[in-house]
Amino acid sequence: MPVVVPAQYVATIKRAANGVGLPYQICAAQAYVESGFNPKAVSPTGAQGFWQFEPGTFKSYGKGSPFNVSDETGAYINFMNFLLRDTGKNVRNALAAYNAGPGNIPAGLGYADDILNLAGSPQAIIASGNTTSVAIPSGPAPSPTDDDASWWIKESGQHFKDLAGTCNRYALANGRL
Image 1 (cartoon, rainbow, N blue to C red):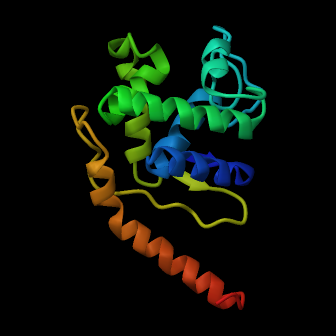
Image 2 (cartoon, helix red, strand yellow):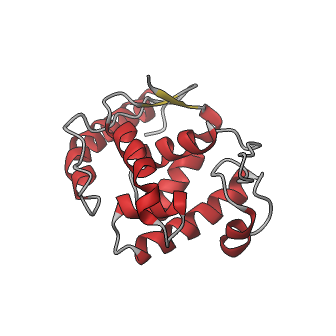
């Protein structure tokens, strides 16, 4: 089942991905798993908003309101950058720490694997509305022991070229180039 990124959140996911240096697909899969793209979501444990921050964690890494997508995306970028530094840029462990806490990575590995598997599934992430579908790598998913984004970078190269070509054709068609 594909994850459909609502058109109003495509730029938010791109901002998050650029801010932490992760592929768009990982951030989209994470937002989907966390809240289903619902900025008003509240979990049974009290996590709030689009990126599902516990109130104390949001206070430490963000400002404003956890129910404001822009404010919470800033907190997400700060927190994920901290987790990536803390785990030596191990994406799987950073995702696990996001879910279970930096001191409890083993408890969050299932969550991390779910996100990585969803992000690595062909046609798993689709931008909706008047936007171009975002293709994702179609090669085999990374091993759960992969410790960096090298697989994503290697597999995404052709897709970025395809996306650049699509953007160029769109700009030409609309007289913007």
